[in-house]
Length: 411
Length: 75
Image 1: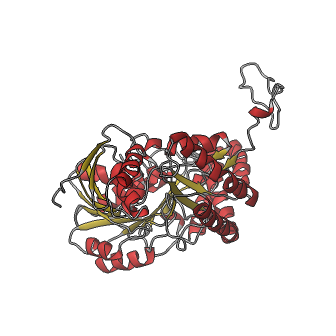
Image 2: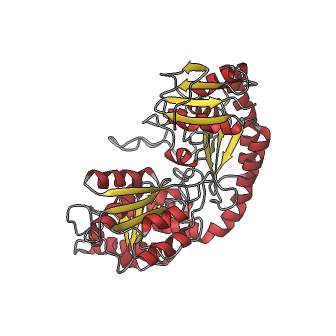
Image 3: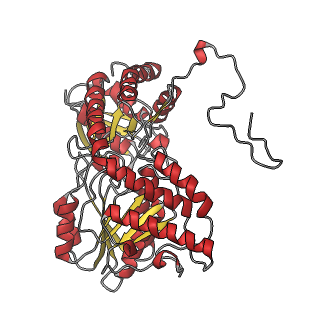
């Protein structure tokens, strides 16, 4: 093994180092891994890797200091901000980098409410927001505010009449709507929700984590958040955009970083990589969507046809190009995840047995669809047609085996 | 909703999903059409999955009261 060059350095195997030889019997052969959980984190985009490595050399100084290396860091940060803002079609001074997508969502909700506290303390949100938004809402309610959850239909589409009724009530400080469901892929009627909010004078916060870098971002919102690892950027970078004229007040202790919107020094190399990969992902978004969307259609059709007693959920048309979710009747979600993992497939699940709280996904619950035996498959730029076909070839047998083991065949 | 008087009670308290749904799927076809079964299940997923099962199997979901879920055999 190379890499033991200096005493005290951390040994790192060279890329492609085969490691010590082992005897492998045919029963041990694990098929090549197929990663299908891009909605959690997409594999690092090559542009992100390249930018990250380059920025490690220049991006470790504090951009706020006044010496030459710090000025170099400041240039990198400014360039990253301009690139990200340009990609999203916003002004650079409207965009802040945060420590994660979750932090950006917390800031969007709590800051949007704080900025409008003289108007009222009512928050309106859809029933299918990301848990980061719901947890911020819980904090708001614990502090004496109110939160109204607006239902969705069986396909996961916002109930616009209920939304309109909730938003036009007096004393609404902020409305929050996810651009597209991270769990079932249903794209939300953001344009219609924007119109209602605009007429009521209520600012709208859009959680755009699943659409930024993949689809055009809807217009008309006041606050937006996103997460770099969803588009192939590194983990630990979120975006918070607050449009000019929006009453937003930081919910955090005073701090001068990121225009006072995100406390603490940014992870500059990661921010540079996030911005570079965002530009690359957005440039390829239409092509990638055109490639991945038919693969999602194929999964939707073949899972429904070839796995008995399965419910493919979410809107089949107005959906994300890369994400599909289904639930298998009588199958334990955790057992299904492990069985798929043993065959090399990495997917996620909204089933209660796979969550730390042992509660089913609030999204599946709000839609009224089966929550056990749930699988979410999400594709990315490295996903091939062959990967999808192998998954589709193996899934029916894996589900059938689990049902046979549980003695539920024919129920 | 008024709680219907069940013809049978299935105790699935403490069982995790999908077990209560499986127990329901095993028992309901053994009851006559029109019979009402009460499934006691405290796994929060049961409140989602029992109505979903009724929809998939064209059985009648009557409602939930606490941890008691009521289903009528329709076919």
